[in-house]
Length: 287
Ligand SMILES: Cc1cc2nc3c(=O)[nH]c(=O)nc-3n(C[C@H](O)[C@H](O)[C@H](O)COP(=O)(O)OP(=O)(O)OC[C@H]3O[C@@H](n4cnc5c(N)ncnc54)[C@H](O)[C@@H]3O)c2cc1C
Ligand code: FES
Image 1: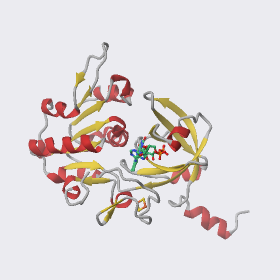
Image 2: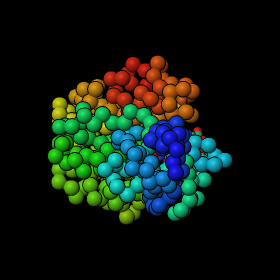
Image 3: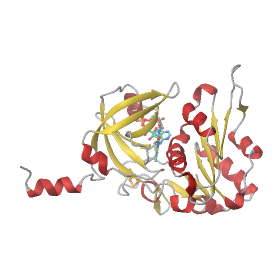
Image 4: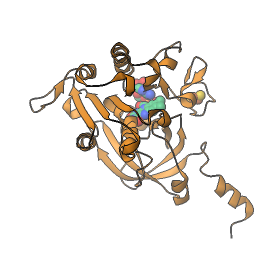
């Protein structure tokens, strides 16, 4: 029988500082170097208690490789587990790419502030994503589409290097079929079969019909892409606080202790990774 101490420990979980074992329930190959993993906690009770907001991330641990911060790319409303889309970069991500159904990793979190859902409610939303940057946006887009009446029109502009590098192809196609949702994808380098747009994602902004006064823009991608998009949005008349983006910094602890991710007086892991341009403008290092 469970004693009082065991009951107390059980009630405390999930402890956000402790990695919990999760097993791989499914793997989807998005591109040559990006895979989406569907994960489930081994302990059903932890699974039931694990809650997060779109834009938050977890620290994934792999034995002998360490830990890596990865954004949750599924919506909190998705009931079939937790999804992470991972680009093969080095030691840890390379190892995870070898994983198949049934393999185990550790997971702690969720960390970070996530997107400001309350401030997005009632507004039109413009999503601008580049490459794997569509991962955290996917979590928010799916959340918005599952609570459709709470938000206005949705415009999604996505840029990838080549047609083969486009992530979440099925999602992009499905979102485009939704009422009051416009999706446009562009690539930097096309191929003979590509029928869509060619050029930087900023070129899509010029063609999109957006009313800056009632729209919140949410951007995620390479820092260079973010800075170009922000520059164009400001020119279009967006208010600085209506431009929301995520910053990537090297992270270790994820909980505001080690200082690896500091920008000025803030820690990206705790006060971010989501910031408005009005906040970013005050940081010494910018994007
Ligand atoms: C808040 C946050 C959310 C993230 N979300 C995702 C996600 O959803 N999907 C995803 O694939 N990646 C994401 N990343 C990046 C991911 O954490 C790194 O790619 C990962 O830590 C690399 O680990 P590794 O051991 O495979 O590479 P390492 O062996 O440590 O490094 C290999 C190469 O990758 C480069 N690298 C390492 N970390 C980063 C980084 N943060 N950004 C760019 N280059 C890096 C190194 O400079 C080196 O050249 C996120 C990072 C942060 C901070
Ligand atoms: S990762 Fe340690 S303080 Fe942010």
